[in-house]
Amino acid sequence: MKYVGMQTQIRRNNMMSIVLLLMFPLIMLGMIWIFLALLNYFGNGYYDQYGNVVHELDIATINYYFVSAIPWVIVGVGIWFVIAYYSNASMIRSAVGARPLTRKENPRVYNIVENLCMTCGMDMPMINVVNDPQLNAFASGIDKKSYTVTVTTGLMDRLNDEELAGVLGHELTHIRNHDTRLLITSIIFVGIISTIMSIAIRSMNNVMVFGRYSDDSRDGRGNGLSLILILVVAIICSLIAYIFTLLTRFAISRKREYMADAGGAELCGNPLALASALRKISANPGLGDVDRDDIAQMYIIHPGSISGIMSFINSLFATHPSTESRIRILEQF
View 1 (cartoon, helix red, strand yellow):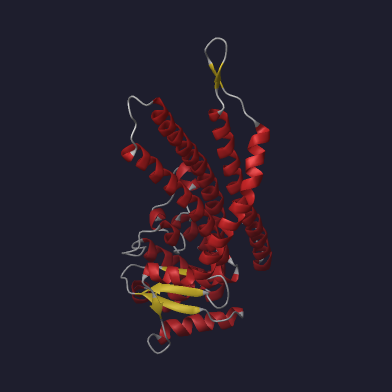
View 2 (tube, helix red, strand yellow; view 1 turned 90 degrees about the horizontal axis):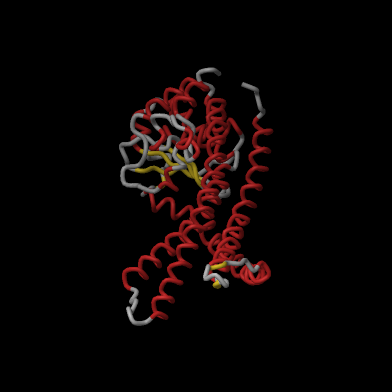
């Protein structure tokens, strides 16, 4: 395996982060243009001389409405992004039921994190703990004030000091490489598109369940069918955009896990200890009461990837590489 320096990889990650952040708004705008185009195409049908329905695409009209919608989209996405960006720490802490861990409560974990931070010259992040017998750890935060490493009581109880240092080094590397900032940003954008999909699906369901189509009113049926058509087009466009954003985010996430493993091994000075920790965690990962994939993708091992990703299609949507491949690479150090 070709060696790549930590700083070189960080620069590459930062460059990819910028590209990713630019791609999300472009995907969003592309989704809106496609929605307007499909709406225009199916809404401008007419009958030719043979009685066949003919559809035409009016590009000028599409572009007019698209340009008019851009400011509203930017303002709406911007407000959503700012709120989610600065409230992410409290939202994640509430979602997993975490609480601060003090040195007095657990000097072992606190001292390990402190020593690792001194080794790599980084500021001490906050340490949170979740009362859960499952083995897990993850890093979160967007800046020095919100950077946090969260561990479960199960992880602290089952791992020895060297294994725990490897896991904590892995999470600290995520912070050092700005992985957490990128991941939270991508979660926000995917959440926007996911919410649009949910609204469209619920709206279509309400129209079909509660809509009243009178048998003797062609206008009523036409209005109802037109609304359903609009909602179907919105769902299709949202689904396409959602798939593209997932593929982009997940591909970058997998690369960053390998880099965090390498950084954790370097910090703790024992790659085999981290490999041993991954084996133990893979037997019982996750958080018992948390059933959210946006949170799960921050875990050191995603609960859905503990047995390895065997098919190409599944690997496209995996937030983490297989645990087996990560252990195999660590054992080659």
